[in-house]
Image: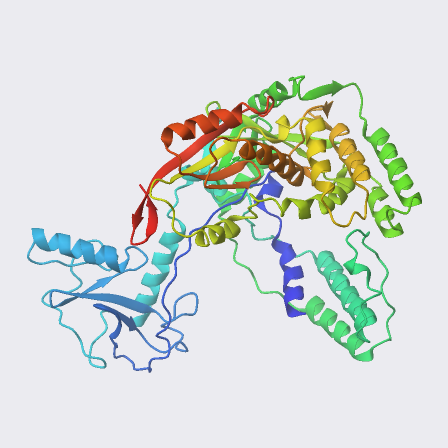
Length: 590
C-alpha cells in the first residue's frame, strides 16, 4: 500500500523535460561502490580508529552513524581512507583514485622525490608536515573535525555527479547560439524531471480513487482465495471502470477513508527547486522557439539541437523515396479502421477469438494516423536520421499487439536469440574456453526494418508459425493480420499524408518480432549452406555477435557470401573485430 501511494504521489514530478520540449532521450550515469562493512565498530569520540581493511589499506570511521554531525548526505558513516607506504600513512580519496592507482602513483613519485605526500583530494601535497607513523587503534587524532570531513565528502560527491561537461552531452547542429543556462539545462538529459511548481490536488484525488478501486477489486475477487473470475489474467481486455460497492468490508472502508483524509489534509513540505532561476527561464525560452528541433541522439545519451528547416528537409528527403513511401491525397485512417473491424468481426464469428479479445481489438474510439519523425545519427557522416513512425492510437496498434503476442514465443526458440545485455553476458560465461585463433566479430545489418520485403517477411513468419505445437489461431489468419499491419501503415508529417509500401516501421508493436523471425529464417539458410561456419553466431535483432575460427581471409569470404544471398538486405557490415589469446586459462582481446 505504502509503495503504491508513494508511486502515485510521485506522479507530481513526472513532467519530464522531454515532455516540456516535445521530445525524449535517455541518460547513463556511472555509479561507484563503497565498503560500508565497518559500520559496526565501536563509537569513540573524538578518537579516530584506524581499522585494517585490506593489505596496507586502512579505513577510518569517524563516529557512530546515529551521530548527526558525522554522517554523510546518504546517512552513511563518514570515512577516511589511508594507505601505508614506506613507513608512512598517506590519505587518499577512493572516489578519485582506486587504492591500486594511488599506490602506483606513490611508487612512481618515490623515484623522483625523497618526500612523497598526497592531498585530501589525492593529487599532490602532504597531509601533514613530518613523518606520519602507523597509529594504533584508539590513540590517533583525526586530521580534522567530523563536520569538515562530512563537507569534504559532500563536495566530492557533487564533483562526481558533475564530472561530465555539458558540451559532452549537448550536440548543437543548428546555427543558433544557445545560452549557458540553456546548454546546462539540456545537459541534464531530456528525461530530467524539474521540481513541480505547485501540487495538483485533483490528480492526487484521482490517484487515491484509483488506489481505493484496486483495493476493493482485490478484496472482491480474492476474499475466498478464488481468482478465476478476475479478468486481469486475460492478455487482451479493455480497462474497466466498475468498482465494487462500499460496505462489503468495514475495515477496508475505514482504511480508505483514513488514507484519503490524511493525504488530502496534509501540508506538504517545501521542496527545494532542482533548477536555478536561469534554467527555469531557459525552459520557457526553449518552449517558445520554432526555429530549432530538439531530439535525442539515435545512439548514446546525447541531446541534439537541429535547425527546423534542416530537420524538415531530412525527413522529406527520406519520404520522397518512392521505393519505401507513397504520398497520399487524404487521410486513410477511417477507411483502415473500418476494414480492421470487419476482419476482426469475422474472426469473432468464426469463434477464433473470444468476446473480450474482440472488444479489445476494436475499441479505438479516436483512431489517428501514425506520426513520422527521425532521430539523428550523430555517429555517421552528415548526421542522417533514423526513421520512426509512432503508432500510438493507430487503427493497427492493437492487432499489432495481438500478432506480437503470437510471434514473440517463436523468437525465443531461435538458436541465435539474445534477449538483452544480461542474457548475452550469461551466454558468454557459459561458453567456456575458446580456440587460440578465435576472432571476435560484431556485425550490423544496415536499415533492416525498412529493407524487409513484405512477402518474404510474411513467409518467414508463416514458416515459424507452422512449427507451433498448438495453433489456437490458424497460421493464415495471423498472416492476414500481418499483411494488414504492413500494408495499412499510414502516417502524417508536416501536414502531408503518406503510406509505407516497403519494409516495416520502427514503432509498431510487432516490428521487433517480425524482423527477428525474418532474420532467423535468413541466417538459418545462410549458415546451413555456408562452406565454413562461425564458431558462435548470436543476434539481437540487427546486431550480430560472431566468433570466427577459420582465419582472417576466410572471414572476408564469409562476409561477402552472406551479403550476396539476399538482394534487398542492404549490407551486413563488420563493426569491430579482435584477436584473442589465452591469459590464465581465459581469453583476452588484443
